[in-house]
Length: 131
Image: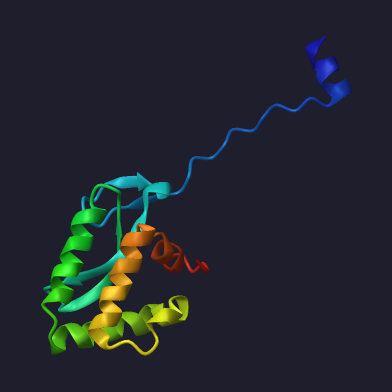
């Protein structure tokens, strides 16, 4: 009888919802829900370069602190590496307010933006989306 009632009134059973996409945190190496994803510039001392890093909520504050420490210790190496980071990720097209700033001021402004947005802007950029 229920099958007839379902057919007559086209009652649909709700489809199971898919879990949100996951990511691997590059700080703790744990798989996390993508709603926790934060992206930021991260200094890799072995490569002597800034890379886009994806961190979970727990690892994000320390990683941001590490990036700030490297920017505060500004030198030619940091400038070269940060220019390459900006170019690789086309950051200035997403943050036009960086135009006209000195290189270290650009780096500081980027980190301030990351902190203000919890890395959500760069998470969207990382996935090829317009923030």
